Image 1 (cartoon, rainbow, N blue to C red):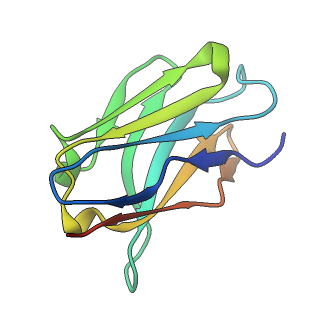
Image 2 (cartoon, rainbow, N blue to C red; image 1 turned 180 degrees about the vertical axis):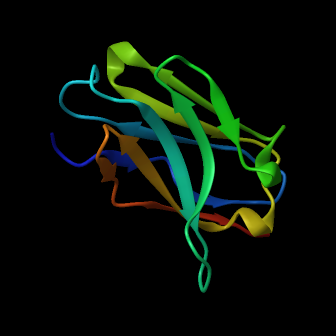
Image 3 (cartoon, rainbow, N blue to C red; image 1 turned 135 degrees about the vertical axis):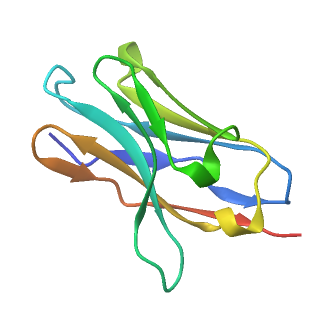
Length: 114
C-alpha cells in the first residue's frame, strides 16, 4: 500500500473552519483504525482524533466539541472537520493508518491566525 495522502490544510482566521481529507490506497479491510495527529513547532506529535473499524471515535480533550472525524469507505477517505479553530490548533496535521503496522501521511499545515 502507498502512503496516505492528506489535503485541506491552509490559513484560517480564529473561529473559522477547515476540513482535512486523507486518501488511503490499497485494501481497507486490513485497517484497524484511522486517525489524525498533529505536531506544533517545538512540541511532540499528539493524537487529535481516531475512528476504529467499528466506527467508534475518540478525541483529544482539547478538540472535543469542535472537531469531528468521519470516513467514507467507498472513497477510502478519512476526514477531519475542524470548527471554531483557535490559534493553538496551529500545527502540521498527519493522517495515521493502523493496519497492525502504521502508515503516516506526509502532513498538511494548518495555521490559525488573524
